Image (cartoon, rainbow, N blue to C red; front, side, top):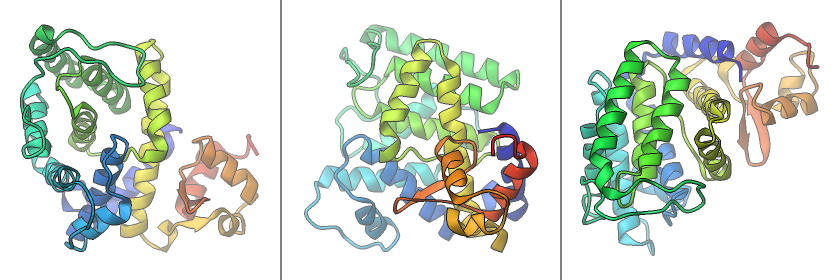
Length: 300
């Protein structure tokens, strides 16, 4: 997805609501989506409806493992607290604090570096031995700070930071969830909204991390740009004007020069910001107009 499209949508979003003044109801819904997605890809048994019932309606859920319920409640607390952390430096202590908040009643090792050697299921690399973790996390903090001061591209730096954290795998368990919280804190610190990694993204997300390990930085950065486009569409649908309302490809096709089939193809390719809802691609008139203006019809 072209960076210029994301910048245009971000400008619109920030004109509607600066990041730190997003209405509570919207931030709460965003937190529920983020919590469900990040926990579900790690095996948490709560469905999206369970999470919405628990976090949005403040009602109990039956027949679900207690640790999964506690993890859900505590992850939302950590996610919602990211706004208060965005003015502070992102450090290794931040990772420890987030891990403690999410897993304090779930894991006996909450808030502590791992003291065992581990592997990563589905990954092509093996994390370093446990005795190297403290030193590597110091290196991670220092390099992130240096690259941040050099004003490195937000997506490039975010991809590097997240991959390096996951490669160190500093905790015995819970690395993925904390790593994605740190990634969203990075975006918030740079005045971008959070992104959501959902169950449908899991295979591509892991493949992107493998590509980063192999030295191909473009794959993970592109994944993050597409996730950001999706996030901004969702937020603008709640905060924007009629021009930001999500519509199906059939309805969008009536408003411009592209067919519904073409629009669905470009959304599936990540060129046009889009959300897949109940099997159908959706986007907004504003996003389509931005695509037409910045990309033109060369691919039509």
